[in-house]
Image 1 (cartoon, rainbow, N blue to C red):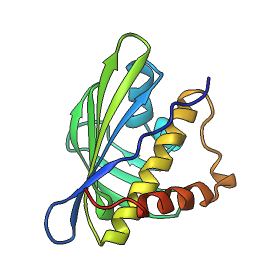
Image 2: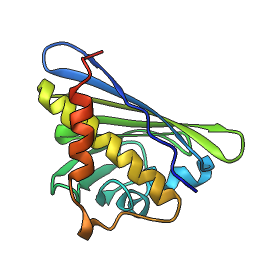
Image 3: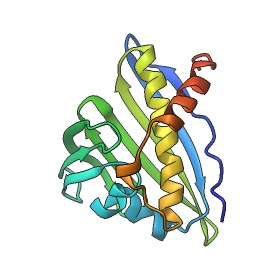
Image 4: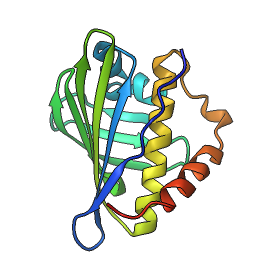
Length: 169
């Protein structure tokens, strides 16, 4: 099965140096399969980051180590509604929220928000990064988790260039 293309995100300024990034990702997988990919250490490792610490409950501690760039951030689980919403608020990545909505029995919409601080360049970097990670999520859900030892930033750079050609929304 060919992955569904990830649509470009939107972003909006929330005041000086504050951004809200939004993605709506449609994946051809039942939400029962998507939830563990967003809320377990094994699931996150396949497409996003190693969860060195992940206390799966509201207020629980979380430490994510991005294998693609080496960044490690710590924080807390700031929303937890089993099989529906998980939100982590972690260091420089700010608030990252995944809200699942089942579509029939074999498809899911992920409404994603990332509220963070940074420059406009940081915003573009993050838009490209999240976009790429959502592509990796679709692959992981199809049984092909990311082999981080073979990671390159070529796809990220391509996406970064495409986001740079769009103006702020």
